[in-house]
Image (cartoon, rainbow, N blue to C red; front, side):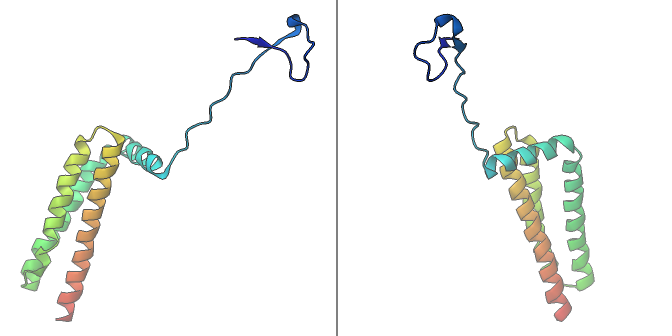
Length: 131
């Protein structure tokens, strides 16, 4: 580490020199994307059972749709099933994802497909209750 004179003292004795402080680099800013990746990675690491619970939830929702076909005597309750299958496929990809970016991508797609499927269940229930 080089020695320098104190600031403002041009006639200082070299024996009184103080070590120069290294320039501190500012920490890189953490954006919302990196924060989201960290949150998803930490949840998946802390709760390994979340994959099994999600698979069970998707299976139960699919079963509810199949039972609704028999009770309502209509094929309309089958419309959310493809979305639950897509959510299950995304969940499988999420389980195999190795990087934080891919974990975030697959978890968002899984949640989105499942939420749209839940929304379709409510829409089908509303349409069938009116008719």
